Image (cartoon, rainbow, N blue to C red):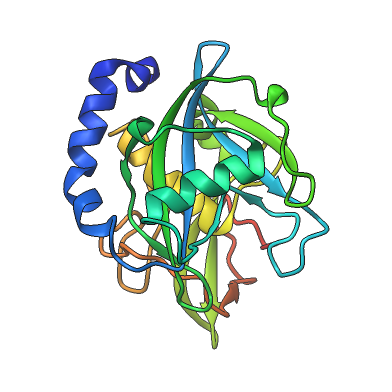
Length: 237
């Protein structure tokens, strides 16, 4: 089943599902874009991640992320931003024709729009990449099968003022914990690549877990609900 997402038929299915959103979002103004690299590691479908350099200035230093960054005025669109940043960070040149489409945008604490760009980058050995040490400490891949195993999935309920605000996914037991907006984007990718297999973790007030109504999750000043005893809660976020 998972190998199907690397087939020509699987790629075509994803491109068709993303076509409308891609046409609408590609030229819209955005603050940043990230590449969601779907690759094959020893024949196994996987997503490629980076560990941001601990030397970076800002709150995201040392976090797991997808390659990407801020849009430059010289960039043609968000796809150009994601591909440019990927080459700068990883030395990985991804042709535009390998881009499958755009996933749903997400927003950071400053309400800046971040657009995820899904691309098939083919067979890849993460250890062969030569990342920019000023921006990236490590590059690693997580197989889709790992991400889809329930024992590797967690979630955090966030509260503000003593009231539930929303739930975000967490992916565990890999080289590093995947959380925050990177986990949200990972969830979007899994829903597309493995339909019916992944149970979404996103939820907001009055919405069931996995509700499509939470289309554009935002990071906020909310904190984990310390009183919750829900299995899978990671209180360290």
